[in-house]
Length: 512
Ligand SMILES: NC(=O)c1ccc[n+]([C@@H]2O[C@H](COP(=O)([O-])OP(=O)(O)OC[C@H]3O[C@@H](n4cnc5c(N)ncnc54)[C@H](OP(=O)(O)O)[C@@H]3O)[C@@H](O)[C@H]2O)c1
Image 1: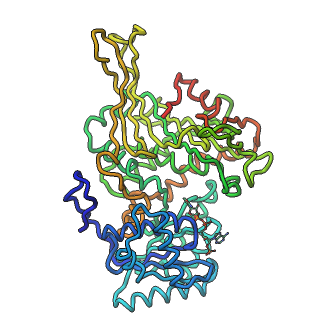
Image 2: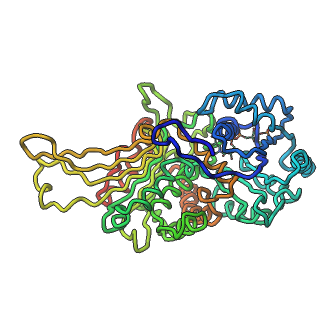
Image 3: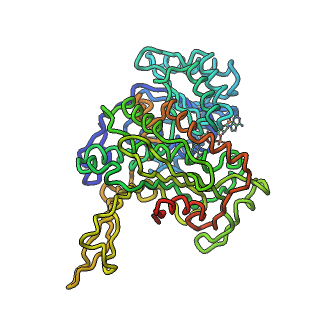
């Protein structure tokens, strides 16, 4: 049992969750995600004594990399990207069990070699171990990897036993409904659903997990969490960065696919779902799917529920930055949206009539991800009639990044001889209360998959339900090209068409 931190609030707390002996195989081990997130996550789990004693890391990729070189690459990644400095003792224990297998993703013989490599590890320690496959390659090779895991017998290893093989699959999970269905079908040919962990790293973030804790452990919220008291909900995922060097990728994706369909919908599902019968994967995911299914089809006509735009040149932090069309790798007349805003209606008992607004964009004024619950205003009997009173509606906001925490806006009397009101913000920040060394989302997610807890992963039907809602939007936008595509200055809070969606219901976007 490892102590999590020396912070006073955490003294004496221990983690009891232990993973069984595991071989983690990373496909795409020479890639960006492996270096920036996966290797540091494994390392920090090791520092926290959360890896099993029999833990093995195997990199897999097309490039031939000797074991020693892979270990050096991994150590360099820890030095550059880990939240903790490289400690030779902690890394040494993992490095001693780290190796690399070179092979193609569509090469059955190479997968047989991988299977033999894993069998050799088992032989050396004299016991069976579970294998966790982490598919961290571009989506174009998800399918061949899955099929070869099936053909080589690796997917079915120890099926029916607790140490059965497991697979984590990176985003994007499809690019529309048909491709998500196809990927699910391939997964189902090779794996059982309980072996599959579809990742959305937003679900590993502290505030996102805390949303469930806040909702379902604080009795004050449940009576208010419905259409009688909540006026609207705003979910924002704003980035300051532009497309940078990822223009080629982004042209095929756009904001709706990259952010709205997955991250913001996961945040919406956790905010709006009914209380699950248990704090466990299937109960939570059943409720998420139910609420996603209750969302009404989107009105795509003029004055409808959707808005899209592209950033134009503007100023960020005092520097001028180019517009999307001037970025590297972008087609001169590209219609790819870098901003999208959506108004959703959930047609169930709890939420009927409460608009849920989602927005996401690149080159926005500030990097922020948050869920803001806007409560209905207090009745105007005492304070609302006079403009002496600066009365605000209460807003509860969950800040997901940066500065993870939550805050509540309350009206307060300004001290003095007159009665004057001022909205004030009551805030809680994780870093202030618990110290700043919070585990990264990928640490939690890799550990959960090793343990076999799918709570913070997306089930196949969740992914398809979300794509079902957005595929008609993607089709309509592809057909319309640049017609109806608005623009916004880099460094602003988005385009006028997005404000218009809210104005129809007398709402305005919050400035987080
Ligand atoms: N990077 C991020 O921050 C991030 C964040 C969230 C999700 N993701 C997702 O995570 C996955 C991996 O991302 P990444 O940024 O690490 O990707 P990447 O660096 O472009 O690719 C990872 C590895 O896959 C192999 N690969 C690259 N292109 C390939 C191709 N066309 N065909 C076959 N193999 C290819 C390469 O290894 P070999 O040449 O050695 O085989 C490469 O090192 C993607 O699905 C991405 O969408 C990434």
